[in-house]
Image 1 (tube, each protein chain N blue to C red):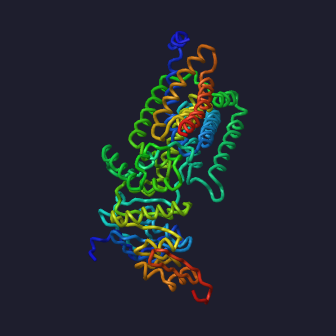
Image 2 (cartoon, one colour):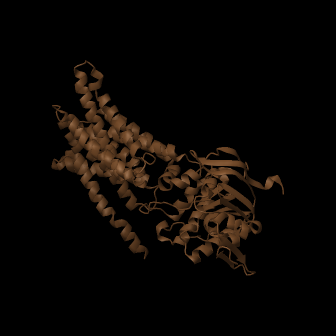
Image 3 (tube, chains in turn red, orange):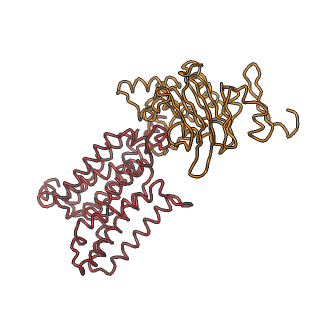
Length: 287
Length: 256
């Protein structure tokens, strides 16, 4: 099984590396999402990112008639994905609520509006619908060397930022009232967290699709939450879970000829089911 | 009284949220080692003044002076009204208390010393590695105080910290605070609705009503006249020599 995986390395090494680095990046950001109990927000942000891509494709098709080639470039697609996911994260984050509506209501609205509009916008475009379905289903085959470098740099920077500010991050995530009382500007921290979430999701979605992006965002952090006794080690355990499961998932997918993204997310889901038993066993042992 | 004793001084303070003025012309002097109680009806601005002291809310007018050493944010401990931790999040007493060190500069060794000292102060020694969610409500309230104490504050602010505690836990908690005030000369600001608690433990009282704050020593403040002005009904606070405190609401126009 391992030999077969290694023999595919020459052909798919960018896919594997990009997949693991995306898992690493999203799992780090995901700890904050899970700690702040904003899991559905992750789904809405991923969906909004897909809307950004759909809109970019529509603009790209329109610009073809006007010789505006930049609007058909990968950079424009990525930019739109990031812009829409950052906007969605800011809109649905704390402080973004409108009078009389909760975060949950806004998050649901973003999820449903983005999901329906992204299909409607590209439904008459020749390849648009296919592309959106590819994004929703997730296919990480086709990642490039640039993707590997970009996600490597982003994951490294994110890990560095978390290492430098871990205690503030944990306090902000766990108890924002106390965070404000000790002088943290919680509104700015919330905006920064939303911006990072939007950036990570927006950049990942084009390479890995919605299922893999959302799966890597929340599942490793949820597994870590059940395995750890404190929030701080979750920032170590979640990336290990993401990359470890990604490695196993890619090997299995290669051997049995399954799509790697779906295999990894299925394994993460299975791991979470097992991890749910850990706190119960711990409580039983304490009695 | 020396000026050096001052921990904080508010002069002509006006506090507002947008256009809504909550407090006007607040004058308050808090000196070191005092046990202040902020009392008043709901929405009278007690928590708003706390927010201003913590630097979360900027005064509209007036000045709020904090002692450069004793009143610096690093020297203020805060116990919030409620701790909205997500109960699904794993945490230990140690992690919870150490989070109180955010914004302070303490080495790893000093951090451990402070943690042990704070836990010992609140009677939670040896519980650092316990799951925060496995300890009782009274112990969690003590952990909240430990999280504030770990900053080694000279001013401890508590915003209705006894809400939700049963009588025994409340009594133990208040005795702990009285000890900190008496033995460690910690200055305390305690926000509460419970006049009986204020009557028993306060050295000084600030009464909040009609956007104003009246301040003074407990004996001058918890009088029938002052309380009638605030609550609109006759309220009498009495204490017997054993320290037993009674609060009676008297019928309109009737004798107490």
